[in-house]
Image: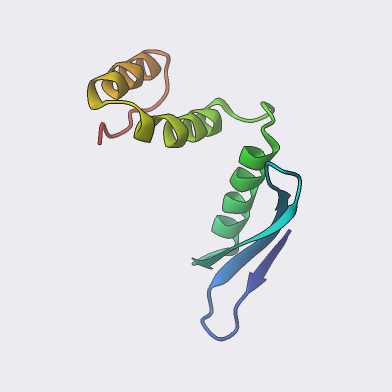
Length: 96
């Protein structure tokens, strides 16, 4: 778990380790962040998603849920789910 500045490009990058579904340790690298804060936010969100821990903000959970569910359901189903989330107080998301 490192947030590094690339001297060549001047951008920030994240290198983090996680365990995949079979228990093997993997490295994930994400590059191109303009600020260190953006890189740290991405690292935090990635770790929360990999840990599958519910100790997170509701908005973060909804974002993970959206990224997981939206590609697997039809448009009308997603619009219904999105409407229910909006009524629960989650900020509106684009229908697709």
